Length: 349
Ligand SMILES: [Zn+2]
Image 1 (tube, rainbow, N blue to C red):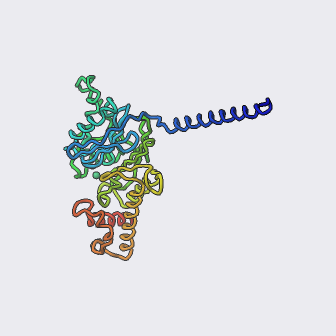
Image 2: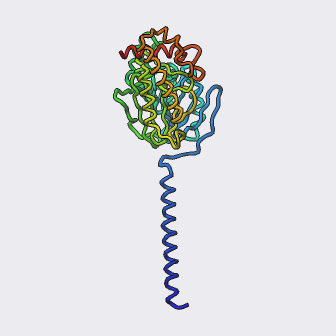
Image 3: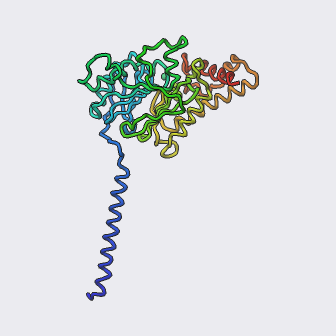
């Protein structure tokens, strides 16, 4: 081969080598871009103890069911954060399950409890779980009065503090240790530190289930904990005595839909943990929002026609949804739900 024919082929070798190098760097770059910045230890399998189930949701976030309202947990190198603490009588079982489950993920204590409302099935565990915030560290607790401040921080919207410290007959007064020791009055509040590698935002949804509802957004794990503005078990419980309203619930559900991003056709992407019921995605919230909006509008039309509460109740305006959402009795029964829609629209007038 002459020198003239050798040179172009050499050039091709260099060209292929360079292209290969650039492609290789691209793959490495893409791989490091995909790698989460927060530590992602192997997620434990689901844990079942008695009525309690604890399982991974996404990222650092885990869900605990069977203790009253759903509990959402961030578990990682900085410790443990609870969204809600379940019913008081379940607190020991919750603590024992969380200790067992979190052992491979962290040795740090419970740092925070965020209360989504003042409901007893959501704040009932505040005393015991809050106090366990210091004992999780083990060893360095002297047990004197100064250590009382070392329990987990309990955070909620200020209206939750007001409801818990000056209850108007319901629910029963709470022990002081159950009341949030940190509160916010603005539209939302960010947790003051990056926790387990992500920012955590508390969002106030005004006058919805109550006047103190908080939704919690785990920004990197991409999980929303809604509290009782969204349920998969029943019609929403709109507590008018404690400042709830049907329009507030619809607004809260729309806010959830604004924050959540689906991966494909309303499935996947942001995962949403309701106050009660199963793990959800955008589609579930959209369906629930539609249901509440449609029933609200039917009641509003009936009211415009001058129908009384009894006539609205008798009109069967929820019939097509009752099979899925109605409870026989209690705050989520058809009668109570329709009555709360009627009364909150009447109050609005
Ligand atoms: Zn609840």
